[in-house]
Image (cartoon, rainbow, N blue to C red):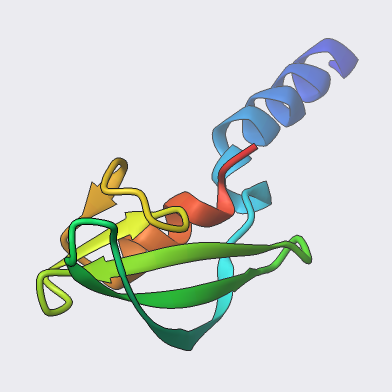
Length: 90
């Protein structure tokens, strides 16, 4: 019986690992900037539930949201998806 309970608890913990992932708690506008090529973008700071702050950027008039300072890699079409990705960076 103890073995079944232990196995059940272990499976529940593994299945709910997303519950332990850091989540965005606040997204604040930080300012506008230009790349060296003259492309304009907006900077935002995401505060996460684990206490960290991560930058994200908005490109193409907020049509593309990317994780990082001036990066166009790891981009998403929605702000919340980019914020979640930023919070889950190790």
